[in-house]
Length: 283
Image (cartoon, rainbow, N blue to C red):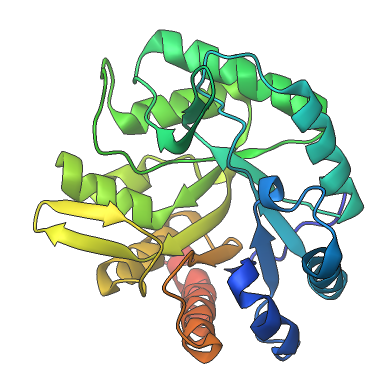
């Protein structure tokens, strides 16, 4: 197994629109890059060459899009095999997927919410265990944003915790999704964070969202991170400790220096959390 990312590390999403800027960025501008293997497996030509160059220069983490862990269609064994080869080829230590589904007699091209039920816990956990077996590694699953809840026999926080325990997998804690869901569904974001299992948190995501209304936030990854989300990330570090943290940005890209300024803000919060840890331990 390849070496893990250092806990105090800040990364940036590897997007095709950023390829040129990332290749020209200083070596220490970010600590790692994250890509969706679904978008890069089998890619050749100038895009493939650019990716290979970046993967040689920087640690790569991977965040999948299309496994459909919560779906009812059989898992794509061919795609799993190709994903394993991709992760091995690029020495990827951290691989994650979404706690959602995206297929139903074909690809839906969206991340759909899973019912929060005991039956769904068992179903999803079994599929995660299967994926871990096929990939030969532990994976992390991400708490996702959702706007409709098809059926809720339990709270989201209990559903996520139950899946993690039964699947024996890790968590990619998306702080922006916690904030968005807390506003949209009327729960306390701080309480959600406190109830997450620290030992299973492998990494964090932060991203921007769109303020549709006071009680409706849309997870877009197309804007700068809001102050309230930065504060929630700071709280997560205090509660659970520093982990590798990725800045997600998928469109409406500003000049790279603006993104790197947000990466530096992650680093600053990580340093502050590390400085506070010894004092809190003796409090």
